[in-house]
Length: 354
Ligand SMILES: Cc1ncc(COP(=O)(O)O)c(C=O)c1O
Image (cartoon, rainbow, N blue to C red; front, side, top):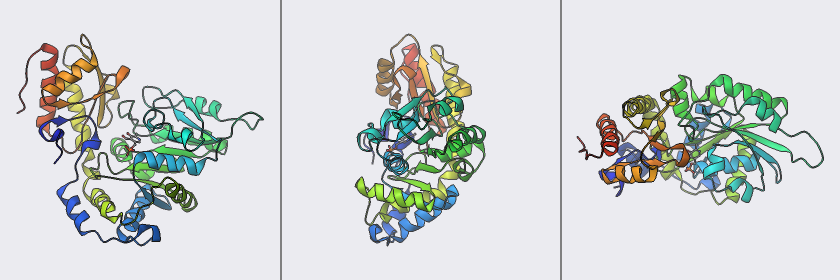
């Protein structure tokens, strides 16, 4: 039972998803062993399937997306090497500055445009010359889908342009692919098609796929060997972690293919909101399961508190506005309720859930 959101429509994030019955059964029945001896068959199978899904040589199971990004950057960069990251990236905003504080990795921040992109020319300019006084550039990071840019989807062509710029200068590219399955669904390609444009990818089981815990990093054998060493340093090497990996295997079988439903509901939600006076939202920017919008005439914290009082949970995105995220626990009736509740709050009336 989830005490807060059980009785609420919870659009704060796709991380609020609870494991499905099938996941819970798989976790109960999981075959396990000590993963630090390489003996957990469920973890080994999850890592094998994950590498195959991403078209990479190897993958490693980590505790979280944050640990996946951090261990990847630690593996790409030596102490003092610089990471090129986006001004709206999750790594910059929400990972406690871990790459700098723990890794001694300074960041060179390049502006994200509204579509979640870094201009390849800016990336080229950010990559350092070999010159006394300059740090060495260790990695360029992209994010797909781009969370703070409203779930914007980076195309394969765009990613290739960044990869070409980085590789020309001998710099690897890392993808924060927390929602790579959403990106793949939106583009109508496989996750491996996206991952082919980067050297390493971190992706999460604990978001739209509904698992309780876990992320993976995929890349070359040599790179994943380094990530395993960094995971251990971070205290993230686990033992009978097949208990949680089991949910990931169920997610691969049952959850990836249903993500287009979440995208359809997000679009319907956005269209419903766009029709409400006082809401401003750019429908072209709604590309996956995340929507960000602004309201006029009321400040966002007060607006969000009023929605909560009526049973609707959303996220405050500060100057960017209000965020709503669809996921497998959100039904068509919930979408209708959300639209009516926003309309009701802006008009000062109470709305009941169907
Ligand atoms: C784009 C992105 N990257 C990384 C993360 C970090 O994942 P975790 O919360 O598992 O550390 C998130 C979490 O919401 C995310 O949205």
